[in-house]
Length: 118
Image (cartoon, rainbow, N blue to C red; front, side, top):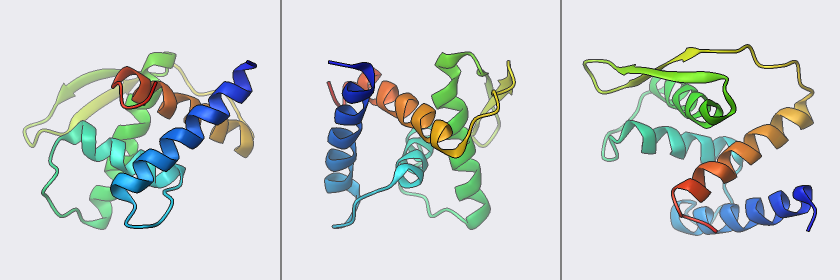
C-alpha cells in the first residue's frame, strides 16, 4: 500500500474513533484533535480552560507532535505543570495542504505510539 494511502486510511480510522469518543456526535477536525492532544500532554483533564489556555494547549500539542521530526525538543515543566519546548530547527515553508499532511502524519504517529490505533 502506498504511504499516502496508508496515512489516509489511518487518519480516517483515527478521526472516526476519536470523534466517537470525544466529538459529541460531531466529526472532529485536525484542530480539534490537536487540541485534545494538548489536553492529554498537559494532563489536567477536569479543568476548564480559558481562550488563551486553549491557544497554549494547541501550541503544546504542535510542539509535541513535531518533536519526533526534529523541529522541537522538550525543555521542562513550569511550576503550573505546563510543558515547554525549544525550537531546534525552523519549519520549512510549506503550502497549506502540505502543512495539513505533515500535521496529520504527526498526529497519526502520536496515536500509533500511544497504541490508540494500529
